[in-house]
Length: 328
Image (cartoon, rainbow, N blue to C red; front, side, top):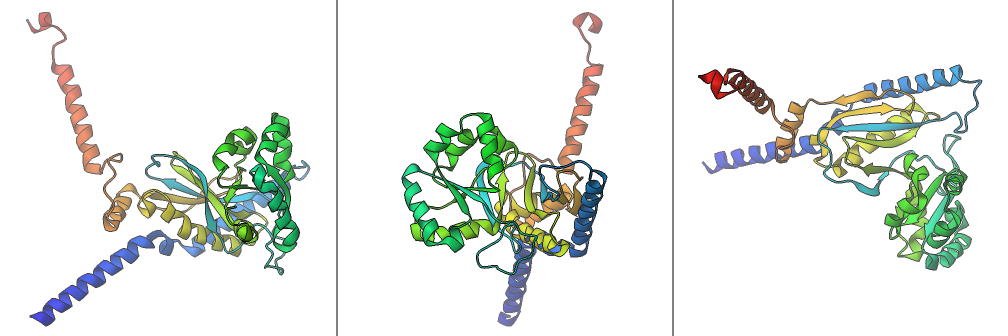
């Protein structure tokens, strides 16, 4: 009997373990690499065709366009999180100090670092001490200077186009949306947060920020994360997409139980789906993960009952007399 009980308990533990693994890596393991590569190649081919058709029209943005991974959620987040979430990717967009053999796909970083006025002197000293890791910081801009010298829309727009990346002390990040204005918000170029509490760690924080992409969670049902650009090799884009899917979804509300679709797109193309789940499947994933059923998304039975109830109410209204005179 004891042996039978032990076997039963071992089987239950194994099943529970498999279920946990299934839920934790559900969509990541079922992302089809071949389908993802086909979608990436289709997006790149569309971009190439569009570029050839408009070759006589010069572009201020250059030839390459950002490629995004788009997550469609079943349920919108209850509240937005304006602070960008850092996601490390295997193939960064910018040249790093410890990667000297990269090809022309990566971009030379030109960073504007926004800090408190009191932090400005020692940040400039660190650039001189560590030119290899911090030489990419072309401007250290104090918060007061930003508010005084970049007041008009045109001044802010010029600042936006002068640098290809903006970083900021995470302690002043909430104050920057108003100080930088619509130009930065509309182009999704708000500064990424880095910690300036430890001076010696600043060079490493800069390099780590360059090796990542960023996710911002809003109150809508769509989250878009940059995976690369149209000048990258398809294989590298695919590897970045898989890394984003693995690292970003666990940081979203309700995790994989909330991901209805994943697509790949550029600003000019449609979104090509590489992952799709019905609401019913997502409810099953939520049950396996131990997540409470979403009261905001009714099940089929509830929806059908609701439709039946509303039909009955309409029929009752039709049958019921409009006034006591009609009843008489």
